[in-house]
View (cartoon, rainbow, N blue to C red):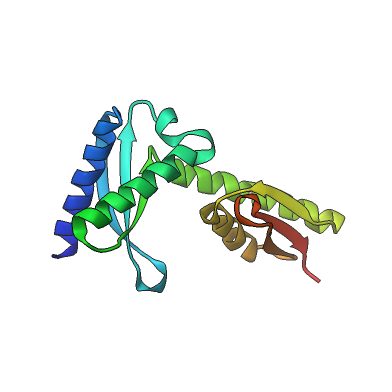
Length: 158
């Protein structure tokens, strides 16, 4: 099975799942993404009329739906494909918000010399924060805490 056929199946599974959730899809697409460690990865983008319920508080519904979708895709294809679900460009907006927070806190850390903690967040969100901070002068980041309490700390670079 080539990627085009795989993506068509993923798109069909996505639309079926959202239909069962009573979410009306206005537009949908699937595109290949380069995953870490040569992992098969696709982005499924959908546009819906009322995204709030599907996204949920801090993207929690979106993360859960993405996991269910990934399991359905694995069941249909017989192999694991990392599926990233994006609703109404929420992921891009989320990334921009997190990067702005990191930039603001990094400036504060540089000025005060004191560390700054971000709230607990998913591994995806922490990765965005670490990547943005890596490009900033005078600060380093670490993830601290366990499981649900894991969060990013921005520290002065010594």
